Length: 166
Image (cartoon, rainbow, N blue to C red; front, top):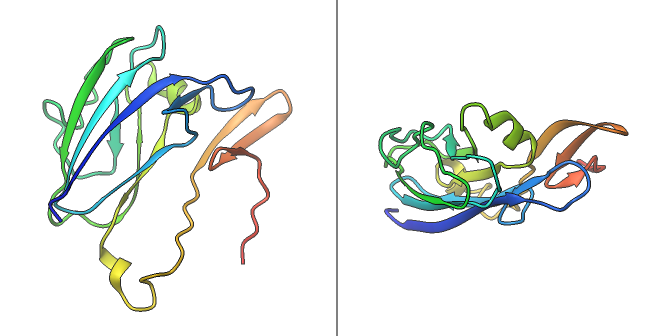
């Protein structure tokens, strides 16, 4: 508890052919961020998208929208960066959340282009006997994308994968 995650995300075009034309740090989905209630998340967003304005929204987190918090009115101009800081409340529920751009007028294009990633707040049930130590299977669904071959979905960056569920 009361730890610090200090990281940088770089939003940039991706050279892949197909869904996911933009990535964070070259990953689709973007890197998974993990922290606990009481932690501080310091995140520097670098905009390498070329001509697009962007920003970052931490969807579902109970954090302040003021100043350099979860402020969807921030504009990170092309070639510039912005340093966000989120104080995760001590009583924040554990769970799976997501981050994505929320620049009004550009967010749909950027999210559909691939800019999104998972955030995991650890705690809650994680330490219960019978749950603790179980393998984690994180699946990030992204789509639908309407391509030349029909509707495509990405699961952990793979196009229309076959997923075996047991």
